[in-house]
Length: 181
Image (tube, rainbow, N blue to C red; front, side):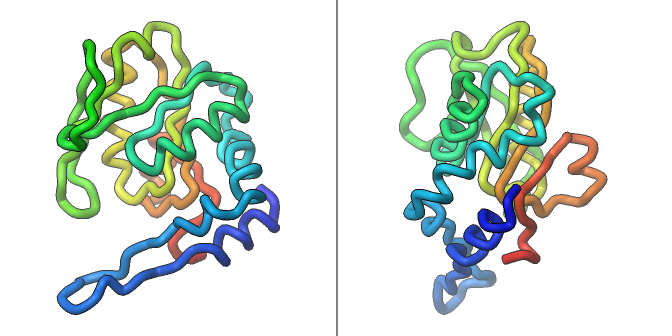
């Protein structure tokens, strides 16, 4: 990743105080989407560590993954598969394969699904997301891959905060850590 992209990601990021009663700051990554240079370079930067693994598809979870996933897929010249979350009110019609995550950083278990017809035997899957803190959703997506006969080759995120041992186990790479922000 270029030093320019790294500096720009940090510059465009904000921590937001949601107000009285809040227990923590909220990340605001909206500046990344507004900058055309960041948009042009994010996809190639995210996929660079996995090019040699020859992914055949990129899978990303709702909502921010729906922005990053297509950028990464385009950089690889492969397709994109959306992973939908239960309860978002926009589940696609047709057969879905589901998996539930272990508890995430908020203690929630997230149910994720992909359309069966878009992920199958022989696919080599690169998971792409904006932020990996506990890798809970990564585990659920890898479970979906296994159920569909696909092979997860790794995960690329803009920000990675999970423990180094967990990153190594799940092949998670990132462009930044929260310490950088």
